Length: 128
Length: 382
Image 1 (cartoon, each protein chain N blue to C red):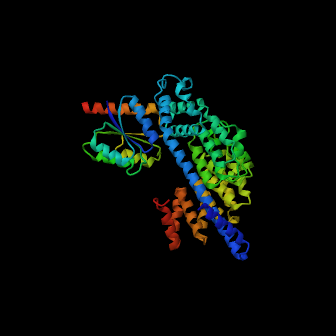
Image 2: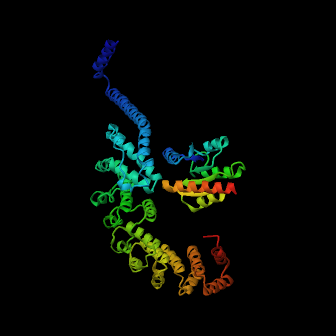
């Protein structure tokens, strides 16, 4: 059972994603902003982080940057889920190390497929 | 104590008539001011209390509504295996008496909209189905009948978010409302909801399309899926609303509707020079080579704003036929903007001929003009 950290400032979206992922068997931990996400990342290991971009205290780009610059957490897969659609921000997210990007409004099925795929690729990488 | 107070007031009342007139007037004003202050404080406290009660109710009911939506939509077992239209909701939670209360129904609508902003696809469609099956469109339509414009806007936005068609009889009058906010919301809703003729309201628009509304509408037009784009020259030719024509010119340029060039050229005879400037800009963006000769012909009789737009347009069309005209304007005009735009237009041609002219001008013209050319040649300066 993979551990997924969901970072999102919209409480409705946060709960909705938790319900969708829990239904699919994932262990979901929630964080309402970047700062809370940093705290949770310090105290547990995650397989995947699902993060919004625009958040108070620390935004999604900072979350990616922090994960990718920490050798112990470099392996964590990152999916950005945001309504920000401008190319510069998306490019910046990928440049910093995001693995995937979903634009809101999202499709629940698509989110699950992308998560499964990323986690499967991760497993293959580990076994190699 | 009360008796003493009433005696005191009675004595004051009896003596009031013997007081000088200005004291009487002052006392009346003091009394009125005290009364008005008490009423104002009373109404503020009452509204705050109302807000507090509403907030408490929202905090109490929202988790229940979220749980209901989660059960009915997000965790619906039929999702993915049965077409959304055939999915039946569990009637037990939905028949709860609490969902009959208007204030609860309003919160359900707000939460559903919040979910729909975040989810599309089957989940989005199922959220819409839940909205319909709970009979919530009726609540939104009822709100449209009220006299308060802010409630009407809320209703229009709810129906738009939920993709519920609104009849032309209801929405079209609102697109021409005297209230700018309501007008903008209705126009945006009409574009998003009308499948066949989303710009029909242009026909009846007598109120202006404000610049900010145009920006918002442009965003909606360019981001709404499967929108029917008409030939905007129809309004350029026949609309009497200047802001509609001006907006249509921008849309013509954006959608590169070359068939609209003759209609746009007709605007070059218009008496309003801002209008002519918009038309010239549009012709430039369309690279309307057939309009170039006319633009150059009318150039001398135009105000500065139109002359600058003509120079830009000639630079965008870049047929090469009017390089001498541009060179002349650059060399002999005393106006800085004219020289700057003429230089840009020559450089925009990006042909052998234009490069020869640029070199020639660099060698023959005076210092300020050379700086202008260097500035225009710099690719980093747009």
